[in-house]
Image 1 (cartoon, rainbow over the protein chains, first blue to last red):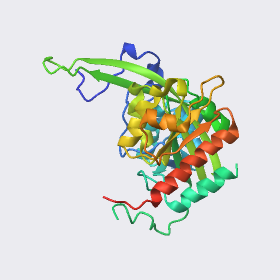
Image 2 (image 1 turned 90 degrees about the vertical axis):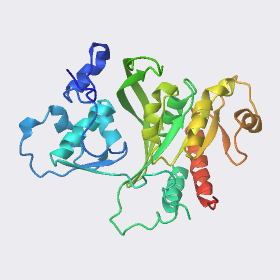
Image 3 (image 1 turned 45 degrees about the vertical axis):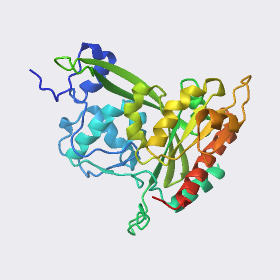
Length: 125
Length: 199
């Protein structure tokens, strides 16, 4: 019998089944939470056990060869955010990616210089 | 004093900076249009399992109903500089999607509440949400063709907004207009940051 803290995807889940099959049914990832605009970079030099990775893991890794945000990855691989987060957490556990928090992490912490730069950038669009 | 000290950062190598701006408002108010007008729009899906737990105290067990929802989010990016990117997130207006808001709001620079004067009440929940979490926001009135124009002050009264809160008129279809909305928000955030914290 499943314990209460496991969140099974049942028949009602409909189209959610397929993407979450990639995550073997997990809807929560391991390790620290990360922001939607956290920056993901591949840290591997060689992937030791490529067989352990799903094609989607590899697609994510390829995108992360240059630092890329979590949302950009989700958009580019066309998978729901929740799924991508789990894939990223897997890769992090395997030591294949580093996930860096975005600079501002709390409201009102965006520093004034950055705000001015944003303003300047917007005016120049 | 309350939140001083965050500006002094280490001399770490300059990182890629990602700035989040939220765009909230009722269904059909023009969020998608505005994001598309000013940014490179990208598809973003999120699929979540929603659980409603019966709150009846006398029920013997928590009656749980599970539903899954596919939410397509409006998501756009504006590259301001190589190391400075603005991300716009249009948040679904309905309250049942608010599980996403908390996450989106964390670390957000601020929010734009897009309003349609014909259905002003649709933006109450968003205003309420940002006020409660002290996330700086402005109200942008999308001036639809044929919509009766109200003055910003009429809207301020109707929405019970603080006198200092900017209300701007916009045309969500226009790139320049959408740009001005974002500029108004950042200016507001700057002015709020100027205020001494009195508590």
